[in-house]
Amino acid sequence: MIIRLRQKWSDEKLAELYAKAYSSDEWPEHKRRVDWTIGRLNLFLSTHPEIVTAADLSCGDGHILDRIEGPTNKYFGDIVNAPHIDRHGSIEETIENIRGDLLICSETLEHLDDPSYVLDRAAERFTWICITTPLGEIDPERNYEHYWGWDLWGISSLLSENGWSPRWVDTLNESYYTYQLWIARTMWD
Image 1 (spheres, rainbow, N blue to C red):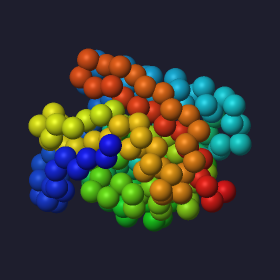
Image 2 (cartoon, rainbow, N blue to C red):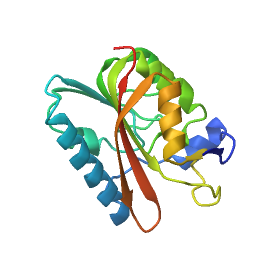
Image 3 (cartoon, rainbow, N blue to C red):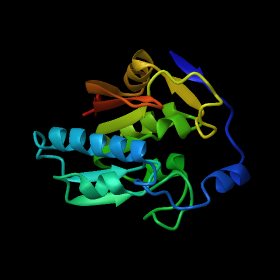
């Protein structure tokens, strides 16, 4: 299942929605998801010492990038022009200007107008990708920031259709959402 939940917000509305810098420990459930993601990534990275560069284009404050072990060259960006990031601008613009071993998109794809474009361009620029996103979201009223909802098949298809070979999937059941975490390798490498 892949479902469009709503149309893209205007630039003015996006600036309003993302007016303040995000904190990864603002909500206990989100802190647990971030810690879970970091744990899964560190497990993966412990078996892939060849990964030395990592970029985080997630919706957040760079907490995941700060706590992963292995990559020594790290880069942080975000969707909006927030003061707490290294690079400003949309992910669609940013993905055109970066390359590396690992791209992290934690709770990101559901916020993008065209996630296929970002995944396709990322497959040409990165060897690995880590994605987390809600599982099975179908109610547009549940989160006014999300444009998309998908199940496991939906993300697997989205990855495969855009140059990625899924290698690992895991889920985390929380009270508000169940989350899915995917790690995939580019098909072009």
